Amino acid sequence: MTDQAPASPGMTTEPAPPTPPAVAERPVLDGAGLDLLFREARTHYGWQDRPVPEAKLEEMYNLLRMGPTSANCSPARFVFIRTAEGKARLKQVLSPGNIEKTMKAPVVCIVAHDQAFYDKLGFLFPGAELRGWYADNPALSDATALRNGTLQGAYLIMAARAVGLDVAPMSGFDNYQLDNLFFAGTRWKSNFLVALGYGEAAALPPRNPRLSFDEACRFE
Ligand SMILES: Cc1cc2nc3c(=O)[nH]c(=O)nc-3n(C[C@H](O)[C@H](O)[C@H](O)COP(=O)(O)O)c2cc1C
Image 1: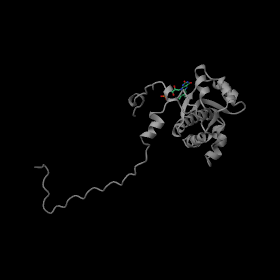
Image 2: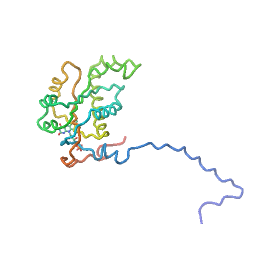
Image 3: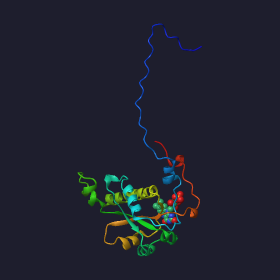
Image 4: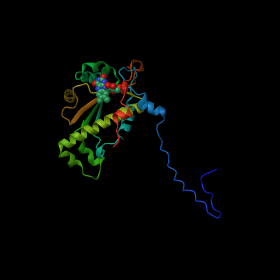
């Protein structure tokens, strides 16, 4: 038995609704990729005695530079400290708790930004004549350099992980003193440091918790 009235004789049946066009599936990272970038990635404090080739840092940069910045302004500048002399200079400005782990890292990157980033906008964002818009407004250009330079520092962290490196970001140092030691006479300003290398997993403390979706997000 059915509630549906039987079709009367001669009644034509409804045509089937059109099939929606197939939506092409986008490629997504597999579980191993998500583990590498996020789920298993940790901030490292102990380092293997394994050098980081220059080509690896270039590979990392060539990925991170593709991350978006406002008007493609790309204000971040990166200084890779590898020598004993460079590390000795850096050591003077580190907070005491950061000295040992930083000195042992094969490479330490100063994530900085160029406050005169707008000088390169003719190349980076051609045809829009944006230079004056920033150059004539230091409050806007400084905020733009810091915001986008910070984003590029985050892209560096993810790009490093994508090419198989481990990272330890650090803000425990004296920015003013660092700028005097490394960037005197320029418009470059330090933001934070990222130690780079191959981490010693055995030296890791347990992972701290993160906020749940409901705690950190809401819909409007
Ligand atoms: C911008 C920034 C600054 C940080 N500064 C320091 C620091 O000065 N010293 C330190 O030991 N860890 C520092 N950390 C490391 C964080 O405490 C660590 O990344 C966080 O607890 C997450 O750890 P996990 O990646 O192992 O889960 C910093 C991290 C970031 C992103």
